[in-house]
Image (cartoon, rainbow, N blue to C red; front, side, top):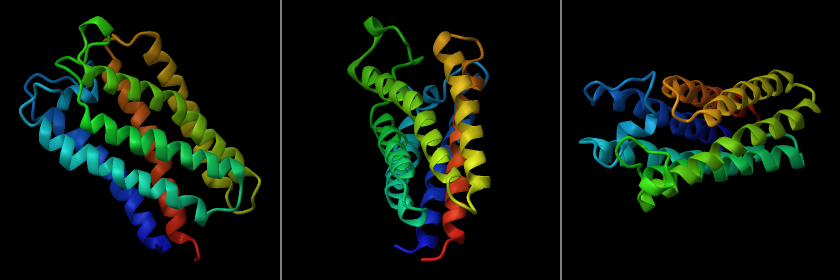
Length: 207
């Protein structure tokens, strides 16, 4: 694939997540973006959840996986960069795909005893994603820092990783917070910002 196509795939992948996260709450009466998880907009009991799953999150996961496995080719050779993008492919790409296939139960409960198998898979994948994504992005940022011409993207990587890491810590500290919806949206915005920045940088690259 050429660099332009890879860039488009990356931007489309995260755009589908963003669109689904915006449209989903609009389809549910009394949904609160402040106090409800994004996953609650496509939970098992929601009327339009299936559409959000299979036209939003599942294709998004596929596209992000393709982008992240392809991206290292367009950056300097570095074990940190390679490991970081592979981490993103596994935990953001395949993680989004699995979360799409396995929606949470009504209300997205965090209590294991109250959860279905789909909910358990959903929660486990979501937790792993939030643990390893900031680490993966930091690895990319540190790898890029060593090369001339990549300082801006390196700074974006470090900033988005730190911001997402702080908000993930706050969210994990109290998953039932009345502000969990806002916390999660800040985290996702950080991830999307890095992904779009990476895709745009690849779009400018020479083959």
